Amino acid sequence: MDALINVVLPVFGIILTGYLAGRFEALGPDSAAALNRFVFYFALPTALFVITARAPIDKIFNWPFINAFIGGALLTLLIALIVGRFWFHYRDVATLSMVGLTAGGAMSDTWDCRSYLRPMDRMERCRQSFLSSL
Image (cartoon, rainbow, N blue to C red; front, top):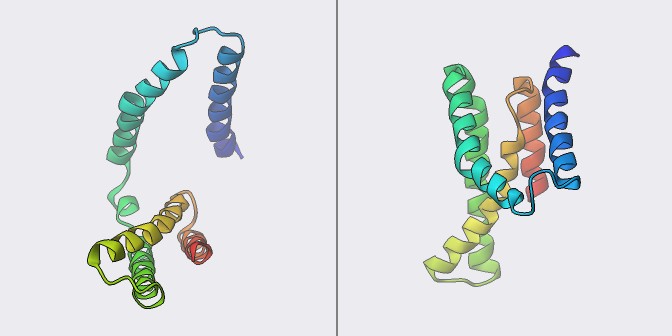
């Protein structure tokens, strides 16, 4: 329970602080655009680098998860290419590539399976996410 509070409370505290700053116009009218640029170009890449650098190698290379994701992505691509070729009668490679990339965009939902889940829960949630994207 303490871990949940230690994670959730700061996130909602930051959200509340941002809401109150916007509500009472504490930072001015152009502050939202400047803060968005700062977060996108500086804060988020730095945070992602630090988190990734501190993560144990076995957490990064979770082979069952990587195999499930790549297998699901390839299966989605194969289904999209078959449907595009035989159902919609696309013959050129450029159009079939776009069909495959569009179908592959649905696979990005499986990245929502975070490492805080136990491995079997993560695999099940990824499987459910993949099946719901079809």
